[in-house]
Length: 275
Image (cartoon, rainbow, N blue to C red; front, side):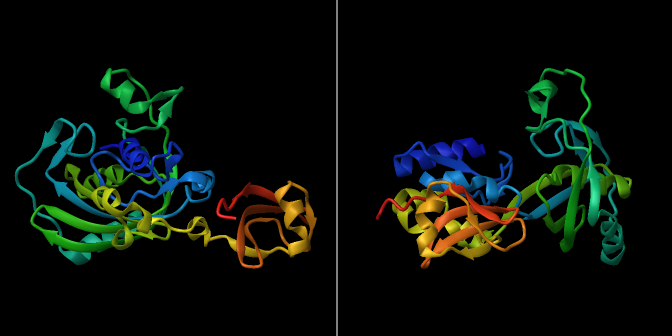
């Protein structure tokens, strides 16, 4: 199932075309996929840069064309001996902080307007540009024979398949991603998530307030006398630093505002259809 497939199912459940997702999840992966319904779709852009947490199983001794079990085997060794846990932790430290990655060719990144995996499937030669990503933390959860289980806290744009292969190269072993589960996207956690089957039964109870996904933004309390002006796109003169804020008036969420050069203007409005 692709992220787009999940969105189509949610559209049917809530009988609306206004559904979108934040943070694409690879078809071979499982876990958290934040989905916006109705007016919430306007605010997806503010959660697209959230950090993420993954649980990954890396299989050593095998390398595939895609970096996971979806591809063909390109190299394989039979005798695998992983270093002790302490030695592994020392190696993994090299992959924390800001690092460069070359994303897999079998990915949705666009090359000259075309998705990389489409080019790869047609055996068209192309180069993937390297990118700077941030790995906040890598924790070893388990070491079992030739499988290393990790929990990885990272920035947007990090490819765990690439990380698995790079760790393998540092150990001079072929490696591929055996299993990947996303357990967090920003303040969306796996333990608070709903399966699609649960949504079909009682979807409404899983809906969250729109401003739930915006709690990384500072709150700005707008005087009630300026609400109409704010909603009409007019500026409000204030004394504050330039930033993006979530705007409230008398406890009611109005939307996202942008403060620039001492003026607050609406960036995205939330219209409460109940009132």
